[in-house]
Length: 338
Image (cartoon, rainbow, N blue to C red; front, side, top):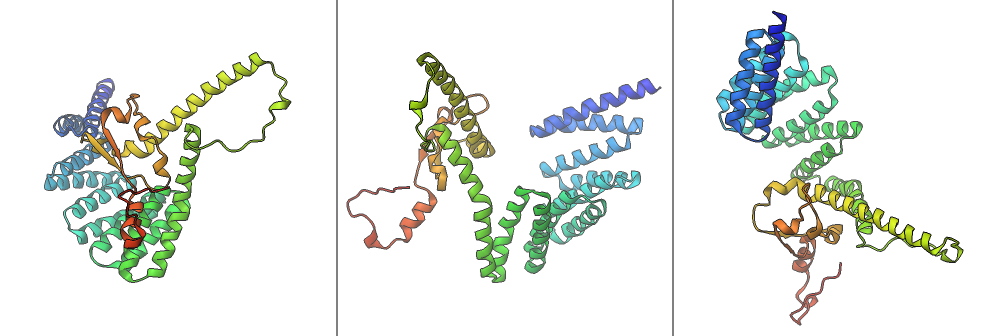
């Protein structure tokens, strides 16, 4: 009997994994088919935790395809099981799922109810990451309801936690929501202070990264070094061999930098690049990126898949737009020096 149950458990696990795979590929019909097969087996063998997980996955699947009532039904089934087996982490997750579901339907009051339940559990079990995330969502929900001061309070709590746990992406997200809230509340001095903090906290790191990358790509000159060539006592053959090794290292370093630039700049939006032509507005240090030379994971150049058009940065265009008429060149030529 145990062998049979173990075999059935493994079968359910395989079905669940296949369901998760097809779900990640947005192939919802196949995902539903395999997740339902996993669920059937989990119910037969009494795998309550697996059953709750499958209900949750199916609920989020139905939400993705717009079947909201079905989504609610399945997530609530998952929630009931997790309450029965004492899975507090799963319970908080399902409250969050229901909150997100009602939020997407514009039912903010109902969404708040579930998100606050999730938050209570996360505080209780010490889930700091989940706590910060929920405070951020609550801030957005209160903002949607016009309760700006309450929204600000939640976002500031989220920011404090994200700062404590070192979650930089969470902090950036909090700044993005907090800025418009401060403007709405008329706290312009604090808004200006916030903007300054964002620039000093996030922009220099990116500038420093790209500066070092561009120096490695040969776009920026190498840092000045004292010339001690007269002190060299190595033979010419050693010199040329060392140069060859240096070039090999530099080539590898350049490729690594190009790969990093692709992952940071292009990869997050690669799925959106459907058109044959891509228009790029490089700003700040980004104008130095050799976009045509960037390669994807398969080694294919960006310039092979898309026609690239580099245009003046939005900052440059804004400066031109707000400049007085007499400032502009009258010779039908515009030279912008970065």
